[in-house]
Image (tube, rainbow, N blue to C red; front, side, top):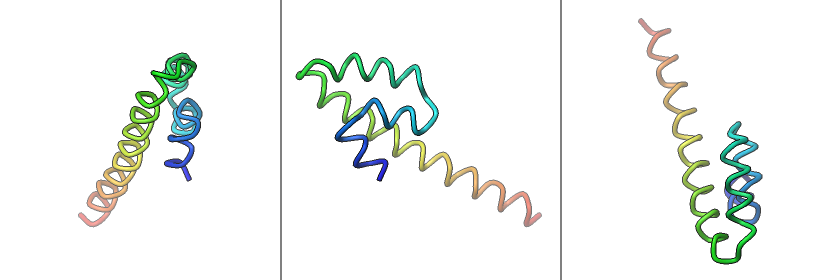
Length: 67
């Protein structure tokens, strides 16, 4: 769902992952038609990194518990 939001409303995806300053900058970028594709790509990469960071944190917790 976050990927869909990242394409349609890129600024909102930053707010859902806890980066409000980036969301405001993305909103300003999205207001121009030329900036919208750039904002959408930026949001997609940010959401992808968010999921990767979450996955890595879970793996690290698992490794710490298994010791």
